[in-house]
Image (cartoon, rainbow, N blue to C red):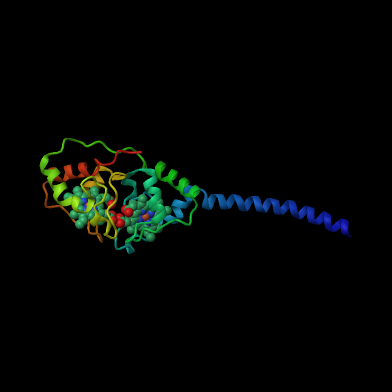
Length: 209
Ligand code: HEC
Ligand code: HEC
């Protein structure tokens, strides 16, 4: 009788081993794979192509960023994922261990080229645009893009432009139209050439890492 039970238990053990292996594999795909993390945790707001048009996006007061347009330092994005963006619906993911966030950032890099080096300014910038930056934009962004003391009190606060930038097109759109639901105002009254230069200035602080 005892021998028969042992035989049965051995047979079951092998089966359990198999089940455990299958389960571990499933856990790996669900949680350790940047693609599946993106689909489950980011796509509802940021959309499949990152443009901020996911199924839950229409319910947001501050729109989800077009994350396909972000060009930033990897460790800065790690900080955003850890802490979220206070004052907006962008959640924090500090419950994910570092390894998972690294795999997610690999996906953000592959899909959107998020950690690409800064873009070169398309052309030289005139002094009029620099004085607009120094007199107006710097009140929140800081003269060197590093966020002014006042900017730090805002919710959401401006990003640190030394570590975070956008494609030229996207920066231009945010400057022209503002960022709804935040204090970033629209500057569409400026001439097109000035808007172009302000986008170039906004993208000039990042040295890239
Ligand atoms: C509930 C909706 C929601 C989810 C889910 C979400 N985000 Fe966001 N995200 C936002 C919003 C809203 C913003 C814009 C915040 C702002 O501009 O102030 C944002 C902004 C960002 C930014 C730019 C930082 C900033 O402050 O603008 C990055 C990078 C980002 N999200 C990445 C992600 C990633 C990666 C995931 C998945 C792990 C994710 N988000 C999940 C809503 C969401
Ligand atoms: C009253 C404060 C304030 C002023 C003045 C201001 N900004 Fe902003 N700006 C912000 C905030 C806050 C954000 C972040 C919006 C968000 O949460 O996405 C921002 C975002 C941006 C972004 C996009 C980065 C992103 O988050 O996607 C650019 C580019 C930018 N500002 C450029 C400018 C320029 C150029 C000027 C001057 C012509 C200017 N800003 C003036 C507060 C300000």
